[in-house]
Image (cartoon, rainbow, N blue to C red):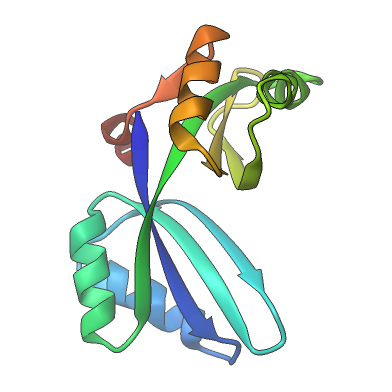
Length: 143
């Protein structure tokens, strides 16, 4: 139920993002989802890829600082209030969302939201109890 995500710390300068994506492409690593957050000095690129260990090794070999974390990927109804319902469920259980990002496969069906929680196991329990579909890593890597 948990999905591996890599986080890459990038200097906030032209070409660094292209360098990362180019290295992944050269090594046949496919990006399935991403989020980029920045400050004035650096950025954090969070990626879900089809081969986490290979991506981590390739990037570290080229001098990038790379970490690996566990996140949860869920299906959310792609309609007004879909996300609100999920967040209400989590809030009622006192579960904190550290960050999240999303993508839609086909409009009108489901969005996929990637969550990082302060207590991942409690979050999974709460989501499962509420009947929320949680994607396995293998499912997400194939999307």
